[in-house]
Image (cartoon, rainbow, N blue to C red; front, side):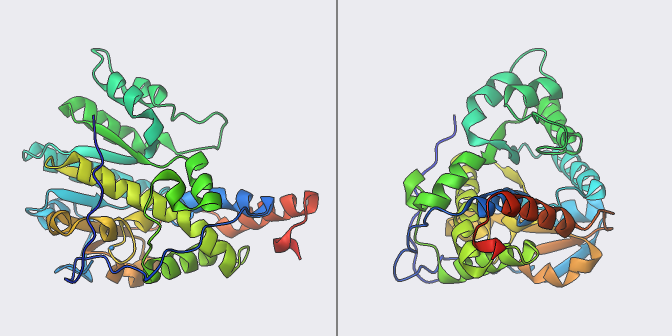
Length: 323
């Protein structure tokens, strides 16, 4: 069973969190149109200075393992649909494990409510990837919904092969909506969000939503991203002193505003945040302790689907975004 200690308040030092002078105001209920767009935050937006900052290497698994070095808290990013990145990460993890590492796997793809079912499924004599995913309630209910599980099966298989724990590292969509409407404190998260995190996260949300959100919407939705980052940090702290690997989107891995900013100074010193970047995002390398350059994944323009969803909802229920 994993417990989550309260993150200590810190002052001074390059790895410490700089706090706002007062909490951000509680979020207020949003229009339905914004809630429809809110679902996309999970997949589109998927931390303290570090000695390897701005360093980029090519997508070679042995070089990535070497770069991990003595760090036993590894935050390993992804672009969720990039097939090549997932293949690389699976190779990196398998080689690191074969060299003796026995980390807990913290996976964004599992919601925290299902930790008990996840633990029980993993210890069954006939445990399989399918049984673990099904037991944790993670299988999509309709085609095209949820995670692309074929990309995450290798990580679950690693856990089974090497008897590694999997820790559900995500805050559910229902809980994320709760913190958006009622504030981070409503579910026990820290509402004292440093100003630079709040502003940067809000800006990222607005920019990733193709002109469908304004700055006020971004500030409200920011709470969902921060709740996830805080919970992932608590899960890492709760697994200590065991080595851990967090498998999550690049937005969570960011060393400037993501999960590393919510780690205790001692844990931050043990950690390395590795972003996996496609060629057109190479300029983002400064956001990570280490970045790995990977080939791009071919995909349709995500703005097309986002604008279509917003137009459909606005036509049925006009709100502020349709004005």
